[in-house]
Length: 200
Image (tube, rainbow, N blue to C red; front, side, top):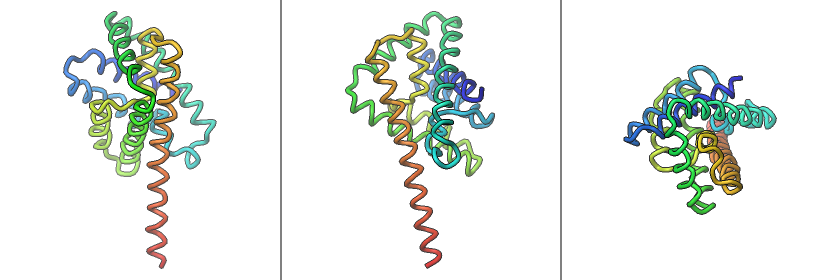
């Protein structure tokens, strides 16, 4: 249930991103999604991926991903009822994403995963929302790819793009995981090196 609710929150942020004409304002409004998720304790794939093998198992992470997918499906259906233009806006957004080459998808997803890990870990360790308030607008305005937000856009577009869109979503999921996990692993190695230096 916590992962479904997280997916709905991302859908709320995604709706704001699609409908707001000023993208700087839209990027700030999208922060409602991750702020709600972190403060309420919901489970988001991109926020949990970096902790896989530490505080969450592979099986739990997969369940979170599935719950997020279903949550964005619910949010997309509701967003379509709010404004019929959401479908067109989401279709245009997905079409633009699919024009990029696959290696661009990989890089954009990796950087988004890294930012998401930093934003969530700053919140968890420092109880500060600054990582969220700066990180979310950064990945959106840079055009980085967030898998759960892309789930929402795909659902809202009524599945535009066919198999190419499905491949895109798979690549972005893997890229987000790699970016988040890499940041976590490098941080862990750094912390271990510091401990060894202290002991020596």
